Length: 505
Ligand SMILES: [Ca+2]
Image (cartoon, rainbow, N blue to C red):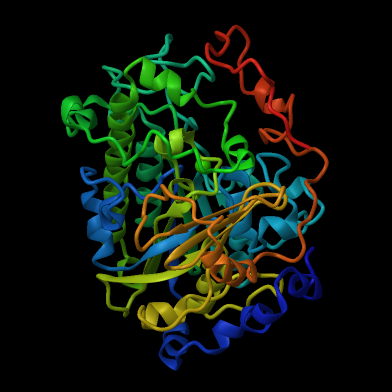
């Protein structure tokens, strides 16, 4: 368990007072406190590997997400929300325990929160609701694994990543899940996300004897990027636009950063380009986003016709972003904008929707925000801060940047105008988002930016816990289990594995 004292050691002196748990909550306007006595129900909706390719965030100019749009009309949408870590387990663990990776030591896909000393006894978000008179219900993927341990009522995964064809549609070389394309015969009803929305929608029609915390975790657009054909029809292949990119954009990235973002489980960018698959993979991701958008719509329909429509607040989030060829990378596992920028939306009964907030916020802020909105106490270890002041006034000053960590001592600090990255070997990146929203030009070596860098460095955690024993699937060291565990028996060896092994201390 992270003590308050230890928490305060994790942030710099200047930031500590402002970041103290509960500080923002105490400043919440009285109007919210008054509303809180109504004991809102909470519907938490999350997505797996959904980047900013939804219409409200304009991450891809062609994506069609009418239901995200519809929800945004009721919401404050955070345009600059960032994950705590760019892979599933540590991102979800941070959000659901309120403790950052640098404090918990959970950096990779293993261990799980109940297997890690620092978080073994954490009061997770659904547990906190349950302790304070709520009925906690989960369906689908909310935690990385073992959701059944965290909810009073857990309905299952409905088939996890969904059906897979006997033979890969397109690729499937590096990992069976790393495949994409139109698989004729697939129907919406066959997809776990359809069934998850169906189950949650039916549950919402029932009465509860207590307020509820219902968490619904969708799987798409996580690979395999399969969706029923009608979702591909929305994006004719020849018209699909590739994300902005430059041939040379890795040239000024430090070797450490290139290496850290080099996933063993994703196909190489060179392979995808050489086989003419870039546009097809982008089409497949867009199809998956529109498919899951439709499931969001079915869930919202169900809420709207339920007895709980007027008294249920909604929070929507993704665990992290996703590269589709940006920085010549595929998948997550980087400290750059595409892997760290996430949707985050709050719809609160009685609060005006259709508003956007440009301030930088993070996943750690979700737990204290929900406590604040529902009038519940915060566990003292929470390291984020309530966003209620921003829900009340999205324009108000907000000095805090968002922090993303990937492995020990690798951090990104995102302020409204800048992204600063520092790796464990001390190498750095700096991007000016006012002029360079796609992070093409690393300014870290230019002396005139030293002051900007120093200002961002003040937000780095002062304590960086070492990776715990049993950390795995991390792509972190030569011979990492990720290279072996992720390859099913009999899989075709990756055709493009570079001859030299990765080198890292
Ligand atoms: Ca994920």
